[in-house]
Image 1: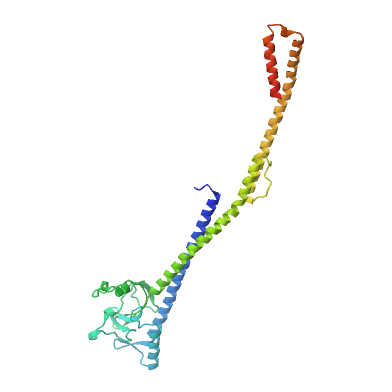
Image 2: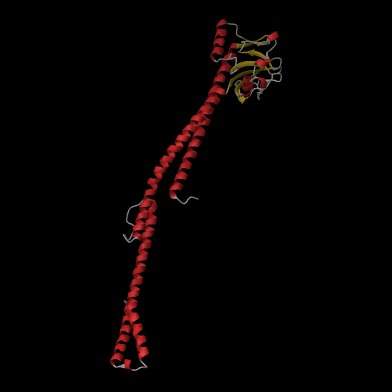
Length: 332
């Protein structure tokens, strides 16, 4: 654990802001992705309803309504939504789910045929659509096409990419007698959305890097501003230690006021303790002066009486004189 308050403030603030930016970016990415998916789902729903409105089931086939103006509108609608796209980036077809036969396709504007007049199944992308129930609203799913058994998609990178790409599918299930299940499928590749999301992620990575640099600079400047009162507080404490001041008097932020009051209280208590010690020592010195003066007077009297001339008194007199002088030095 770091011992520096500035480092703690930098690390904690930088971490919180970066986590917030990442979370905000992730949410923005997710909401943008969901918005684009919903937008595409609405478009596929519109395509489904519009095209089905121009089709009719006749002689086991789906064909456009015979009126020329309606057929012209249907063809214009197909061109508008690019449903004849040869790359199968957008497509619409009706499939017999019992036989997996394409009954109608927007690509050929009718029943598709290949060489020899047979149904060219390899031309279309088939999907494992989960729901089989009849419904009035399209059901959506995101999935990859089913790889055909007879086609070696590994030989052609372009085809390989097509079967690796994910598609958004809208499916409408309905029935025609006798118990024939049909499925109207409209699909669009997710490549455009994936590319937009990839571009967004790249821009977000650049934005995250720039934000990190700016936040770090701002945090460093902020840390000096936040820690400045602590530095001033430290300088004032050092001035007290040097004897230049007796207490902390400068104003400080609210967070430092309790520390300021505690230190001032401690200094006041210590000052009182020193005064009490001084008074006690003064009292002790004063109380010793009187008996010490009496002893000194007695020694002076003994000297006047000539006791120093007696050999048996000389050692005692010298000891007493030395100790009295020492006690006077201590008292002084």
